[in-house]
Image 1 (cartoon, rainbow, N blue to C red):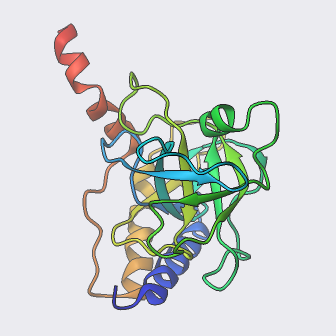
Image 2: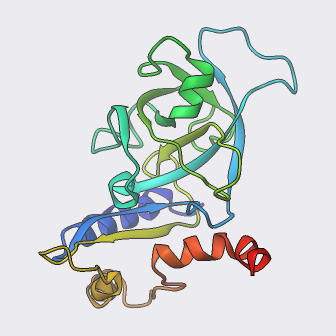
Length: 222
C-alpha cells in the first residue's frame, strides 16, 4: 500500500536474478501456490456482452504472477504470449486465462484479444484487461477438485502483498535425478545481495507440496 511500484520492482528484479543463476531453468513468483489450498476468486464480465444481473456474474480464480512463472511451474502456453516487459503499470491492463475459462466463455472462437472487466482488480479500477494468452489448466486447491476458470495478472499491474517464489532447477547431464535444494545457497545469496534484512521461509520442493495436498487420501488408504 505504501510503495506498490517498489514492491513489484523488487519481485521483478529478484526473479530476473534467480533466472540467471547457474543451475536454474526458470524462476517466477505467484500469489497463490498451486495445490497449497490457497485460492482467491472474483467475478468478471466480458466487454461487449450484456452486463450480468446481480449475483449472476461468472467467477474465476485469480493469481498475481511475476518473472517467468509459467516456465518455472511447467504450465504450458496454449496460445498467445506470457507476460513480458511490455506489461507495465503505465500500459493497458492485460490478463492470461486458463483453458477452462476460454472453453466456457469463448466457445468456437479465440479468447486472445477479448477484454475482461475483473471484479478482483484492486489496482486497475474499472478498466478492462485484454486477454493476451491462454495457458493449460492447473489444480489450485486439490487434485480431485473441479477445474475452474482462472485468470493471471502481472504483479507490475497489480502489486500483491504476498508472493511465493518458484525456482525450477536444471537436471544433471545424463538424466540424473535433480536435487532442487542444490540451488538454495545461490538463491539465498542473491536475496541477501538485494536486501540483507530479508530471509527465505517455508522452503520446500514441489514434491512436498504435492505430498501434503494428498495427505488425507493417503491416510484413508492406509
